[in-house]
Length: 396
Image 1 (cartoon, helix red, strand yellow):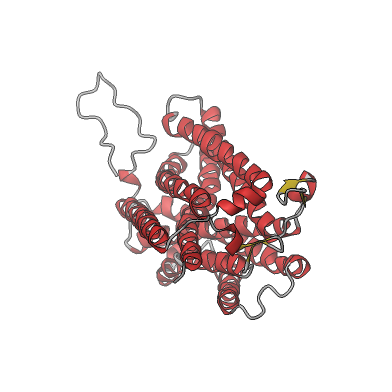
Image 2 (image 1 turned 45 degrees about the horizontal axis):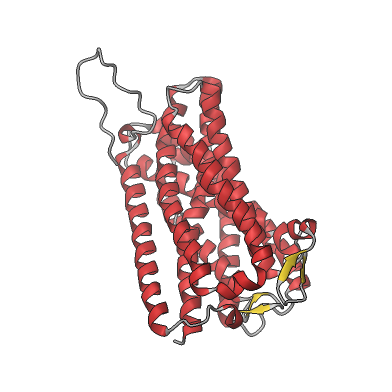
């Protein structure tokens, strides 16, 4: 492989691995917020245990996802300086806003939520997790603004020196490539989070876990969320074809990888919609009792992650050879002076690092799920100094 192909492969690997964390974050955040809202309203202990258990899984995924995001930041400076030079004035603006939202606001509110258990007033603590959810979706929105600009450079014009500048922020935020792709990503997140909730609950119900009420309620909530996500994903996925035909005609013509990825993604999307809408949702009240459905839910759990990667392959590869569609080619955006050895070395390091983080994330989440809510330490009240006995162990 030449330098250009190696650089493209590097970005594809790191971008895909990072999105595995993102799609689960987008799905788990509202589920945790809704569960804690139910606890705040009803005061029932089962909802607090659900919040602590699923919230711990969310925190694990978020913390490791932040690390993969940091690796992504290095990509633009190391390999794609041509993009920064040519379109940095436009492309960099939404990325800067996303950084402020994700690394400052979202992390701050999440920290308040994690360490605010039994310290903050109930409704203020609840507000923190809702603010985490809102900032998570705001972060995803600004990322999609930047990515949609690459698909269709709306709101920009070329300066006399040949660089792009932002000419119309309204056009940037109403980009046809953005209007349907962002809800599509939101739906994918809800589908993923819902099936993770339902699949993990099915695992414990199949093993006849003592916390039957917790996992019964979690399974029903997960199935409802997954159904909503499947509907949004399919609806806005098909709606995107009109925008693609408008701004990127012929995107999938002659591009085998993009076309195959799109075909399999559509197939999985229709499968999710059919299973959720016509099989799971109508009998959601009886699912926890029907043990034969539990292996089905467990088997469905990893498929949204596969569909998410296929979707990104179709969206990004289908734009080739352009990096900024119709304005800047991938070859022109490549940083000058790169050698095969440099790109190969960074590819190996980045892939190993993100692969390790993905494995650690899976192991920690799987271990947390397997141990069940009784081992969750998130939100455990501090030990009373007057009460003899050791404090609760805080371990994963």
